[in-house]
Length: 274
Image 1 (cartoon, rainbow, N blue to C red):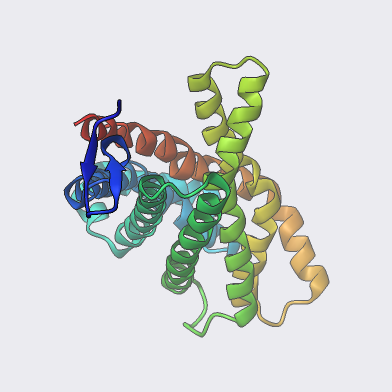
Image 2: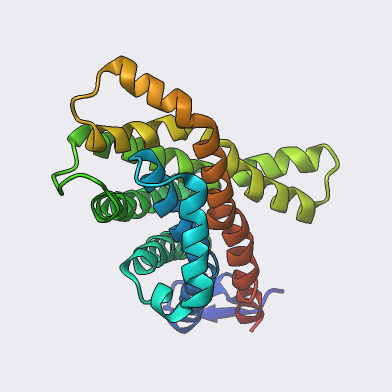
């Protein structure tokens, strides 16, 4: 007979079905926050360098390769200056907020026994809201900081393109990997290999579709009077190398960072065991 505990005169609740205590939930949130901070600190330097190089390449300030070289030179020769820069802090804040939201929403849904479909939608909407708002703020700041023209408001269409781009990235980073991982496991992949492959490939693959939106958003700011043909020409000339750069960027951001985040969150099991 299962051990029980009486909560009221007429209500008997099985001990093994009691809700997680507030103390345990707080501990799980603590792991979620530390995992988000560790993963973000790990990948932010690379992403900050690539983001700046892409923006400066799009506005003609310097070639992509030159921007990458300059960024890494600063990182390795003046790391204290780089980590203290607004450039780095904006990127760290973006990914810390994104990972923390995804982690804490997932933990809350798990502990409240929310079904998988509902929890996936909650996670997607919450993470998209945080990622989109902070990322658009970051892009607005980067476009102004590293632009070649006088500072001016970011066009509304740029916000729309950036928001669509970010929604696609979040879906490919947090929603698609479990689905792809399950499909790979059905093809006799091991669970560990399937999870890593899905987490690395999904965020990178979506860049082939979202890069034109990114370039359009930047070009609307840099060349507000450009024609449709001129914008199409810019995308054709920059698409391939920008897509590769964004794939390389998104790999650490949601691929390697995602794997690291999952690893750090594995320490939750010790809390749940207790």
